[in-house]
Amino acid sequence: AAGVIQSPRHLIKEKRETATLKCYPIPRHDTVYWYQQGPGQDPQFLISFYEKMQSDKGSIPDRFSAQQFSDYHSELNMSSLELGDSALYFCASSFKSQSRSQYFGPGTRLLVL
Amino acid sequence: AQKVTQAQTEISVVEKEDVTLDCVYETRDTTYYLFWYKQPPSGELVFLIRRNSFDEQNEISGRYSWNFQKSTSSFNFTITASQVVDSAVYFCALSEDTGGFKTIFGAGTRLFVKA
Image 1 (cartoon, rainbow over the protein chains, first blue to last red):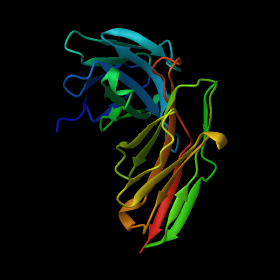
Image 2: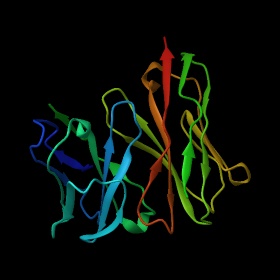
Image 3: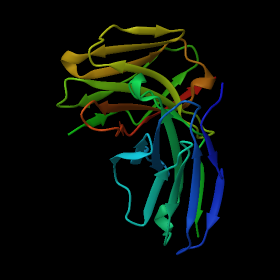
Image 4: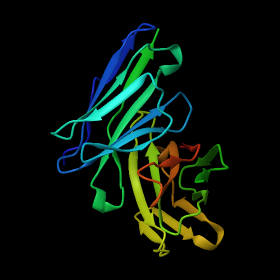
């Protein structure tokens, strides 16, 4: 079965650089979620999109922005990167009518030097 | 406000032992969803189960079972006859029906299963 695809899987950036993470949801899933998981931490909800509209917002810094495109893939744009942005970034997708059973991608591991 | 508490930070057991991971949640909603996820050392998050607030029936899936008790706001997870491959961090999570699409995770319980 198709799963959530995230790219890149690993990313190394310098401070103050920008990064773009991509997420391709499971086919027919209409909702995408982004989470940030720091070392030894639980995943923290950043933002979600349903049918290409932002549906909820969590602890996403103003330096980050995201959107969902017409093909339902989503991109998380991160600017002015800081050392503290180093984390594992998960994308998850669900089909809204299935009561939010979120299926997670493998994650993008971002390291900011 | 929604909150998930996993009081057990780490648990260590010997293979074939049974182990229960505790999860206590707080919510003001009458409709909500509870989840368990497994995160093995490789890092991915694996969906294990979803339970709706109006369905208190316990569930068993192979060696896994879940005990949902609304009276105590608990959603505990038991692994029977644990195996080394069960070693992972297990997260309990909560999503409120009126809380948009946000899902709140507990801090996780790291399970070590020794051979």
